[in-house]
Length: 215
Image 1: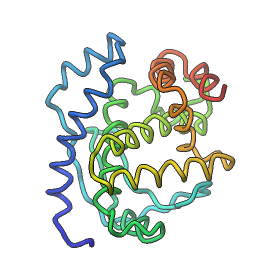
Image 2 (image 1 turned 90 degrees about the horizontal axis):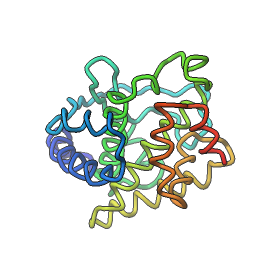
Image 3 (image 1 turned 180 degrees about the vertical axis):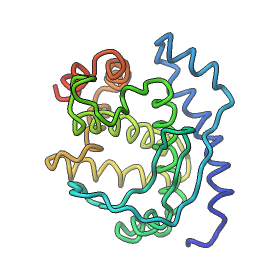
Image 4 (image 1 turned 60 degrees about the vertical axis):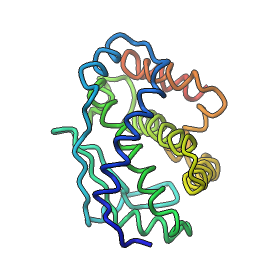
């Protein structure tokens, strides 16, 4: 179940995720965002596979290991595949390993392009420059990235992708009361337009973005 060439799979998957991204974001007409997309039409971030396992301190969600990361310098993406394997084992998704990898890759790909367009959203000292705390900034950025990853999985005809999409949604629902940052993606399920509204506000007025997310 974990024996094939991960690098080759992710390379092919990333091309498809990029194509989906352009279709998904077609309704987002912000001029600066569209300009960035035109300039990077063929761009794909370098993806690195890491054996490292990073424990998230004081995690308030269902899993305390980092699955992936978008790196500021060079906008690279890291996939922590040992943690992904552990995630699959804990949630009985061993047979859906590829789909879980794809979910993590889509999430980090979105972070990469979002970071290029709006570096302020990823400032490590978010408050007071962005008007919100790091915890709230994290809730905003993770919710949009996880919703994109969920939408990517939902768009795929493969039943394993659909299973992982529903699994992820069930975690949002289960841990919403624990203020798990990813759970805020539930907002977009009931009102897809909010996704674009919050994405725009994250760049112009993060404090207002958080209020809209919480309303």
